[in-house]
Length: 237
Image (cartoon, rainbow, N blue to C red; front, side, top):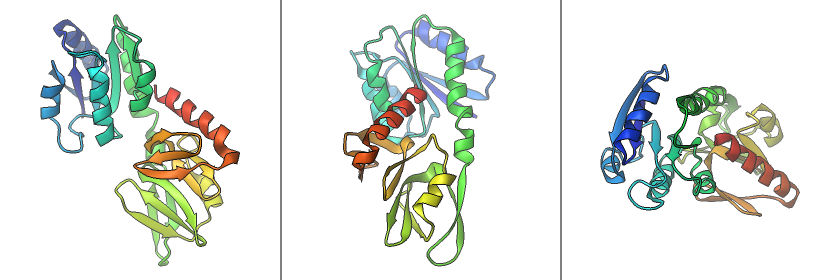
């Protein structure tokens, strides 16, 4: 069952969004909140109490919905975030929290359904994608691509850095692994590094920031890195 939270001051808007969610032909449980404080009180430490967050860019004060979304995204990369608002003012900022949708009132419920379908069904193949790797100790291990932050080539080995903070070493070659990875999710940004775009928090001309790790972008990849990164963000919207 999917768990959705609506954070919206207007009762009329909340009821319309709820009706749209309940008509999406999904097994879904919907909770409503009139402000960010009540919503935050219902979250666990890693903000995974809800799978879907639907909110206005302005709940009580200008831009506070965007700040709430940034708070949640910093704690959980897997929550679907969708803004439903009266203004286009914060459209660009929605990229920073990897929002799946930015809808304007009055909206067609089919737009909301499309956002949910895109987020929960299209990535299924990426979520199932995995690698079977021979570890440095000689045993084989299956690694799901969705859990990889980035890969690093060092001392004739490849080190996989994982979402949970762990890592594993393999004698596989980075070139070989690159061919096995979901192309839309991973990007080779350096001779020695491949990153998961899903976990990128920030990018500038010379580096990606992935969960506080700074991953260099070599000069030959800088133009492609910018294009791939922004294409990925547009796709998430």
